[in-house]
Length: 95
Image (cartoon, rainbow, N blue to C red; front, side, top):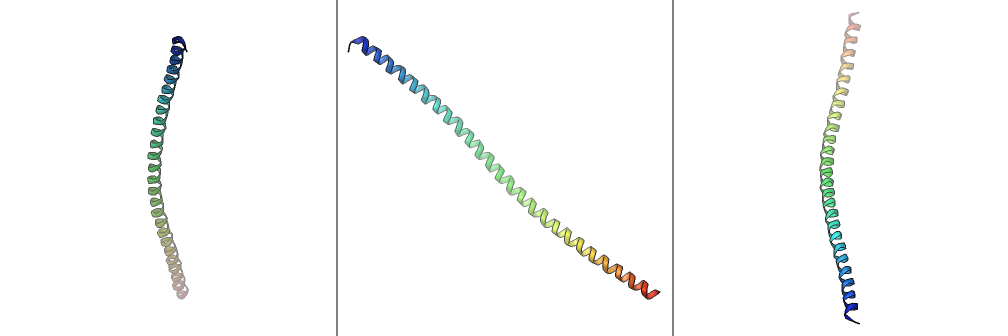
């Protein structure tokens, strides 16, 4: 192998090495981008979990309030029926 061939081989090896370094640099950049995206998704997911918990609590409170209102409406209805029956009874006695 003469000096020219050795120089050509070294040049080719250097070119391959430079390309490999460029690919490594690009891979590193891509990995950094994917890691940032992953971190953003984790933050968003945590935010959604927190929001879901808040909404579940609000739903539970609203359901409890709706039940109290329903129970109150039922009690008012029952009392109204009793009052109407009392009025009918009094009117029937007056006749």
